[in-house]
Amino acid sequence: MKLSRVAGLLCAAFIVAALAGTAYAQDKVVKIGAVFPLSGNAASAGVHAKAAIETALDIINNAHPELGNFPLAKDAGLSGLGGAKLDVVFADNQGSPATGQNQALRLITEEKVVALTGAYQSGITLTASAIAEKYGIPFVNGESVAANLTERGFKWFFRTTPVASDFAKLYHDFLQDMKAAGAKTDNVAIVHENTEYGTSVASVISSAFKANGQPIALDIAYSANTTDVQSQVLQLKEKKPDVVIMVSYTSDAILFAKTMQSLDYKPPMIIADDSGFSDPSFIKAVGKISQGVFNRSSWSLGAPGSVTYIVNDLYKKKSGDDMDDTAARQMQAFFVLADAINRAGSTEPAKIQAALKAADLKAD
Image 1 (cartoon, rainbow, N blue to C red):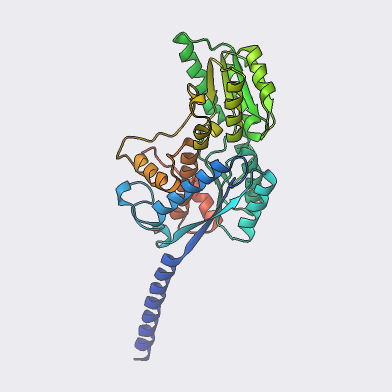
Image 2 (cartoon, rainbow, N blue to C red):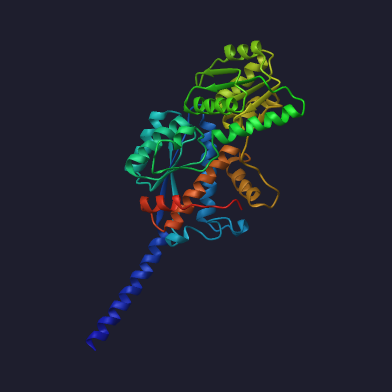
C-alpha cells in the first residue's frame, strides 16, 4: 500500500513535470544575434536585411500552411524544441569592422545569443565572425563573398552563398557568349572599392580571367565611401574598355552612375557585382541612368503562386520593396541556421554546430 502510494505520487509528479516542460518549451525563446549596417552608407542594405529576417521570423514562429513543405513553415515555432519561438537581437555595425566586432561580442556575452548571422560587408563579417570563433558560437553568413572568409580554418563559421569564384566563372562565360553574338568583350576593366569585399572579389575575378587566357586590362581601386570618383571615371573614359565590371556598395554605385552621366560617359557594357547595384535604393536614386546595366543575381521572384513568390509578398508587405538578391541570400542563411537549431533540438552551440555540418537542404 505504501509502495503503491509512492508510485502514484511519482507518476503524478512526472505528469506535472512533463506538462510543465511542455509549457516551458512553448514559451521558451531562442535568441539569435544579427549584425548588420543599420546606419551609415550601407544602411539601406541593412534595413532590407532586417526586413528579410523579420519575414523569416514570421514564417518560423507562426504557421504558414500556404508555403506547403517549406522548412519550418507548416507549424508555429521550432518543433524540435517543443514549439519554442525564435527571437532576433539586431545590432548596428555602422559600416565599421571594429564596431561589428564589438557588437558581436556584446551579443554573445550580454545578450547570450546562441548563434549569430550577418554582417553584409565582408570586412565586417571577417571581424565579427572572429569573435564568434573565439567564444565557440555558430556564425552563419548568407551574403559576404570574399574568398578568405572560409579559408581561415574556422570551426564555427558557415556560409550559404555562392562566392566570388562562382561569379567570376559566370562573368567570363557570359562575356564569351556575348562575344559569340558579336559584342566586343576582349578589353575588360574592373572598378572596385578597397575594403575586404572589393579587393578580394577583384583579385578572384582577375585570376579567373587570366586562367582562361583573358587578363584584365585595367584595375581601378578607389577608397570605400568616397565622395568623388571623377578621376576613376575619367580614367575609364580615356582607356575605353569594352566591358567594366563594377564591385561597389550602394553609395558608391549611386555616385559612379551619377558621375558617369555628368561626364557624358557610359561603357559599352557594365556588369555589376550585385551588392550596391542590387539595393532597391540604387534604382530609386539613379532611375533611368542605370538602364542597360547587367547585374548578377542568384535570386528569382518565381511564378505567381510559387513559394518564392509568396515569401516575396510577405517581405514586400514589411519592407515596401520586392526582395533583392542580397536580402534573399540573407534570408536563406537565417532559414538554414533556424533549421539547424530545430534539428539539433537544443540551444547548445556544439549541437547547433554539428547540425550545421550535417545540413543538406535540397533545391526544392
